[in-house]
Image (cartoon, rainbow, N blue to C red):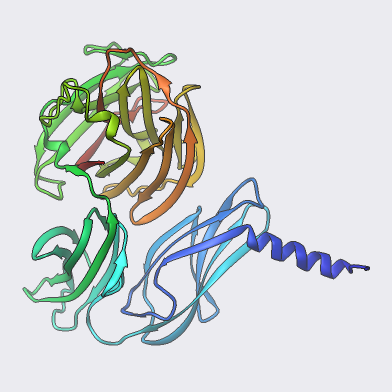
Length: 432
């Protein structure tokens, strides 16, 4: 059978579309929402080795918003009524794919929850996306928050909200509320059932815990160096009231004279030196643990001076060393890298990492120890956008006497070793 050139082109276009994807987590197709409309989406492509170049939003066939990279997270004002919208991605090879969404924008005021849906079944962490508006207060909406079973769990300034809450399995009555600058408030109840959940145990407020340790790391070999460490300086201050989400944030500072020097902060949670009352001296707890979640809010004050911010989970037992290293490479590409334990090297994931300067950013990292002790890097969620990594690596080795789990936070200096400050708050670790 003879196949025309046009047929071949059509086949290649359809095949490319099948190998590319635009995933929109908010708004959902057919949803009724308030304005501004929260758009949260990610894109992938396997047909272009250079990856996704940019993403955009069309409203009624008009391109209204474009952002560089493979993720999109914005609130866009849309007039009341029914609208046909499109979220599209463009890759570096000239290709494009899109997802269409029909939405109805309500003219009423109040709290609009795009995610999760009322009476829905969800997984943990549960993504909450909402906006609020008011006509009774000329000064507008001051802040928004989430209640879980009548307990306030989260607050953010402004008229939009996008965060993940770690919840164990069960049924919850949650409420998303807004408070305006005139003393008024409005809310929307959202009943959810968490399936499976994270379960396990949660160690919370780790940024405020005692027992943190720190070391410098100097190029080119980056062996740890105790203070004083010539070429790099650092400090850590707990109990920070502002900027803070809980009123008890921790400040981290780095400086010095040697370019590309790093500082590692670490806190032992389980096993040797446990700061959480979990010494596991009988060596019976660690071998049973397989699922881990690193959840924290971080506040960079100068992204222009930020080379890398690193968020790690480390596990040591029976001569094995398992390090789920995750670094947000700000300078040099705005990309997430993960750690190859055997070859001691960083591996690019192709997932964009674009934190916001002088603002609280929410990172959630999910990891798993497989039955053969290999490390599974499951997902990274930044500011409500979840990217599935699903990459597996063999474990490394460690001294036979090492036994425990630690979590780390690291700041890497730039080419000028510019003095830099970041903050951590609401830092928790879940293990199961």
